[in-house]
Image 1 (spheres, one colour):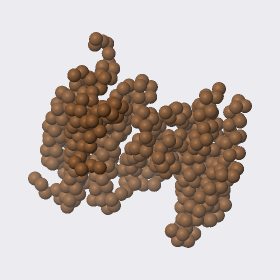
Image 2: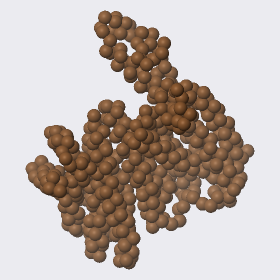
Image 3: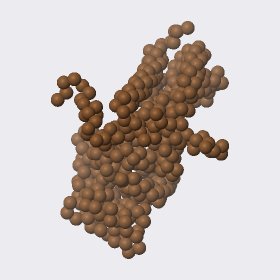
Length: 259
Length: 221
Length: 55
């Protein structure tokens, strides 16, 4: 029955098989994430002091991976959306729907840590530098996806519309980033939060990035599992609703004293 | 071709006629621009400095107000279903409606701008570049607005949702529109780069938006 | 080891935000999972099965 030539995404198209596959993969990824993050935090707390930024360079270890993940998750949502619209992959919408709130959370972290980094560095909680502004706009794109999905009744329709929006957003994302960079260099050539990085700072940064990426992967798998269960519940409730009314158990109120 | 032009003509007539969105959009444009001095104080030097940005932002908001109507009226009375079953591909229908919005709403908004520039004491030398940037950018405004309208057609509170979805997508248009005016103030040739990028954005969005809008319309079940 | 200089509150605040947001996400994911599993068990106890479900 299993075709050896199937790609991984094809093999996992069946929700039941995905549940079985993720059941053992999830704990492994979660443990791995915890280990890598523990190492990262240790490296971060012990990292050398930057001659310019002092200890606040530690914030960079939290801010930069969050910003990278904010972007990366959006790309993942776009890829899932493409999978839905073009290939009609059965789990594409599950993947997209699960990823969006996670991506929004990373974007939120990037914004808050960026703001907390900006205050000691530049004296203001928000400095409209290129990266922070791009991340802010990315946050709006995530909010738009969540708002659109929650405002459409029909699940299939919501899936397709959010997929179109995600693809429109990902097409415009490079243009948005480019325009924000352009705008920023015209107005504030001095506040560049990115700087060339000494290797002793680069390695902790990469370890943090790896740890948070693994954490996202674990959360995404769990969120997808929850969404698959949620859809199963809905399917079962449809079956229950269509049952003949002689089934007293279906009609019995679940709570005591319900009218 | 005649079917395409017929849709364009019909939409223009509907927009301009009674109940169409054009009056509201123009009125909104005027009111928003008038709010700025009321909020910031009548210092005409300050107003002159911020005028290009304020006018561009107000233009985008006003266009957004009316974008909702690109598909909504036809969806409500079933004309959209009939149009989507016609021999014309749905992408051509959406393109026709976008073009009609541009002609009937976006362009009039741009034409109202010189008058509003007077309210904000816009620098005389800035007028040509500002108008040129708005003309060049206006197709993008209609195109992206149409995509937003198509996506939110069946959403609860679609009108408000359109703003949340579309305003981030307007940022590049806004940035290059305003920076072209600022660049022209230092040297006329400096405006060339942002204007060309703006033109590219308008062309690309006009070409791609019909497909995105059609995909969104097809998602209706 | 933990003297982080004059801007220490900002650094700790960042760690706190990261921990808080991730903790909230993980709690939500775990609770949601449990809630869905409970509802499925509930429905199956009432004898409702999917057509494709193997007993």
